[in-house]
Amino acid sequence: MLEIKNLTKYYGDRLAVDDLSLHIEPGKICGFIGRNGAGKTTTLKSVCGILQFDEGEILIGGKSIKDDPIGCKKRMAYIPDNPDLYDFMTGIKYLNFIADVYSVSTAERATKIERYAKEFEISDDLNQLISTYSHGMKQKLAIISALIHTPDLLIMDEPFVGLDPLAAHRTKEIMREICDRGGAIFFSTHVLDVAQKLCDEIAIIKDGRLVVFGSTEEVSGNKSLEGVFLELEGEV
Ligand code: ATP
Image (cartoon, rainbow, N blue to C red; front, side, top):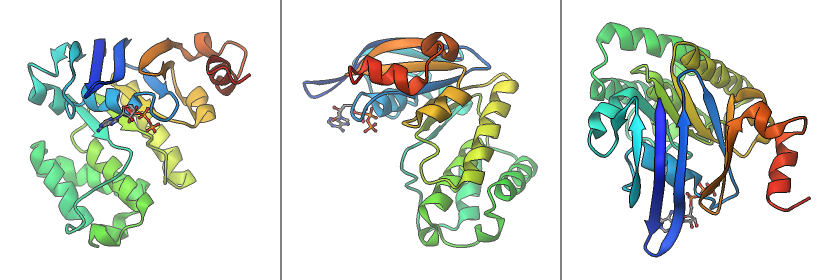
């Protein structure tokens, strides 16, 4: 579903991602772990076609993000770490705007919005301006908007930050549901116990280089993921 081949990205002369390759098969949730500044957001934004990269190739369902950005974007969704939405819109207007962008039919968007707004408990807030939303409410709206066109690949940057426990639980259920129907998830997180429980695969990035990639069992063995990570960072 997602293939990253030799991704290299510089900001000026600062090397942010260094020859990174990984492959996520349909049905897999892959957690992306690394210290602040390790290169996670840069990688995720490159996958989504938000950032241009210097070398390498990124394929989504076999299509190149460079050669066919629209084809790739139709199949994926991105939830950024900061839900910077259009404050001047109401929640429902924003969701309909996103549904229009992805040409989602009226019937389908209504079903999706009703389901997810109920699950995330924001049905009663959808007619309010986004400027009045809390951080968590904006995050919920960003998640719903990402699900509206039924993406096969979901890219998420620290998706649980700001979510209440129920919303975090729902998000994990929805992530698994996407994978059960043949999709895949690539998401960054600093919450290692959640990653260990939720992910099929773990990718660890250090100073822009992928230093670990494998199944969660392979990577953590009989240790905690936190233990493995600290060891790798030379902290134990
Ligand atoms: P965090 O966990 O703090 O979100 P991250 O792993 O997502 O970190 P990135 O945001 O990808 O890290 O940053 C990787 C490196 O690239 C860092 O050294 C950062 O300072 C640098 N960087 C990121 N964005 C820019 C930018 N727009 N201009 C210059 N350097 C940048």
